[in-house]
Image (cartoon, rainbow, N blue to C red; front, side, top):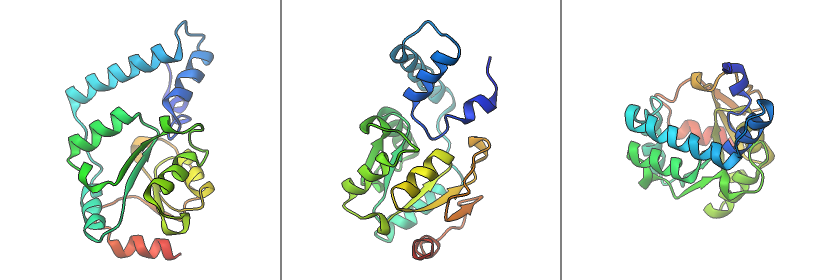
Length: 186
């Protein structure tokens, strides 16, 4: 049994780091690969049973940004398979130029590697990009990559410090392309 506070340290980091630390902390007799395989199995089972639910206002914002010609990518600590499952389930795959998993980089968030790779794949420099993050690790990675960062106070992400974000949001509902552009100009 573990509490929510223990889990909060992993939000925004890689599942491999979580598996390795959990094995060490609890002296588990299992390899990281075995634990990750079990986690993937459990996630798929849960997704089939519960489905994926979009954060209110996110899909609408994604569509507005796409219609405005803004290139977008997902740079997530989730596995490539999970990212693909989520965007397919929510019907938003076509809006994203790239889907990047932390499994594609050497160092997970809070290192900037995933954002640097994403910028490279999109062909943009850091000053032209905004990252939206809901974790302390993610905000630190975005700032280390040299990008602007919008921090989303996600009630599902626990007690995250987003203090280094350029702007904080409590909701995506009603956000406009102008707001995003003004954040970049700051």
